[in-house]
Length: 241
Image (cartoon, rainbow, N blue to C red; front, side):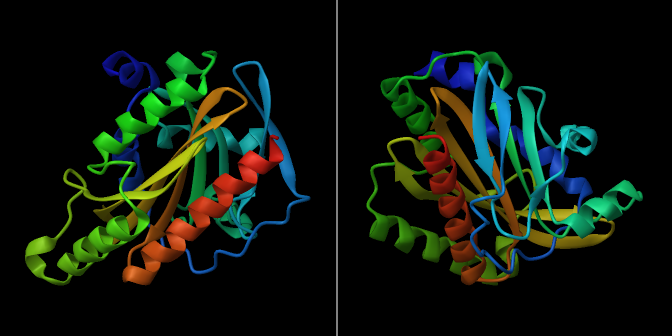
């Protein structure tokens, strides 16, 4: 288990990079157009990755390099999805992003064949990092998430970047599992609570990390984020059948 976890890396180290960006709410989780899909190379495989939502489009290879700093050194950025207007602003020099999503692959495991058994180990390792067991029932997990979210009402529960609040498992499937967290983000003198979904997937025998981001406003912010993450994961799996 420890060897597998080290091999596939930790998805939590990406957090340090997002502090330079200011995000607003992921307000609309409409499903993406299934005809608007692209193929990306991952470990000699051609993997189809649909849009996370109808509002987010992949930057393309010319501009994707601008977002490499958002991926930790242990990962390689595969795709970056932004709103077209945000991409134009970023090209013009603005650091503000209203919403975005990233796809990354662990560098040390990009060419590794991931069996269903190995993916179970990876999923268990990720669950341990996020402070929840994958085997927990959906109701138990929902109750735990609600309890943690309510704890954010008081000033004593302020979340810092260094100490994110783990929300546990968003969903768990044979080839995909997703975990959530909330942390305090400071950018340009402004502070926001950022909710993040980290989805780990087995696609064409490769492991991918999918990240989706939304400003935390209330419990509904997390519910929308979880829905977006699950719909995206299902779309990726279906596109690569």
